[in-house]
Image 1 (cartoon, helix red, strand yellow):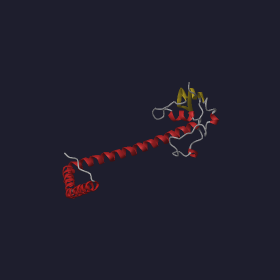
Image 2 (cartoon, rainbow, N blue to C red):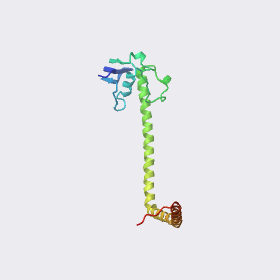
Image 3 (tube, rainbow, N blue to C red):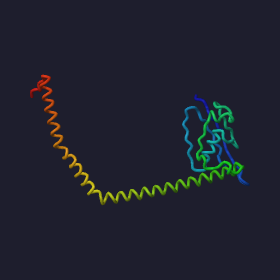
Image 4 (spheres, rainbow, N blue to C red):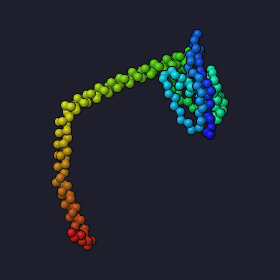
Length: 192
């Protein structure tokens, strides 16, 4: 059986914000073994990033048990054993976050959601521009398509015909040289 790198039993994470509790991660149990390929999928706010932070040892659980049997203790994970690439690096100045972890989590989540909304709006604008460009190209092809095809055919024929005489002269010259070479070497042309 392969080695267990991460073992989680009912791992959960909660934050306190004023007089309410924010459930950042509901209890989850899993094992990550050597060679496993894992994908965390879920809607925004479902706890994917929180779970990754817990797995990397960047945060502590408020419920359940999380262990790294083959990697050691939480304090020895980084920077040598586990590396972390953050989802939205540099978007939030760390000194601008409140000291309370719950409030910091809420503010960071709101900032991330605003960033996602701006990206989505920018994407919609670009897609609308591409749609407009495609419609314009269709109209141009409709009006210029047949004359353009006719012009392309005429240009192709003109280029092909302009080289015909030159090609014929070069082929005749090559045949003459080949005939002289055969005579010089004493080769006979095969009889038909």
